[in-house]
Length: 110
Image (cartoon, rainbow, N blue to C red; front, side):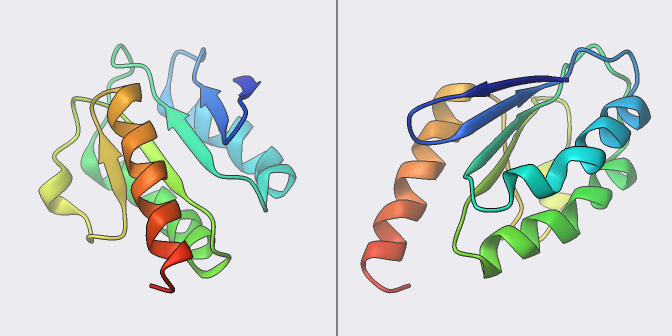
């Protein structure tokens, strides 16, 4: 797991060869990112099933309750299978757009 602190968010990139290994690394350190906006970039080389992404649902809910953003970057997963609050996008640019939109929503009181 590679952690890169940007100006407005923390980018966490998978360098593991399986989603399970990446999830284990991420969940061990998730408390360190409690108050940060998090973008999770999961390699498309990792074989992923939609049900494995559901393990991130709790984190997405917690981040929303804390007033911070959580976005997953992956072009393979079918986003229609997840609740609307679960932000899954195919590119980093789209993830940054989501962060910006959510910041505007929070400043407007939504």
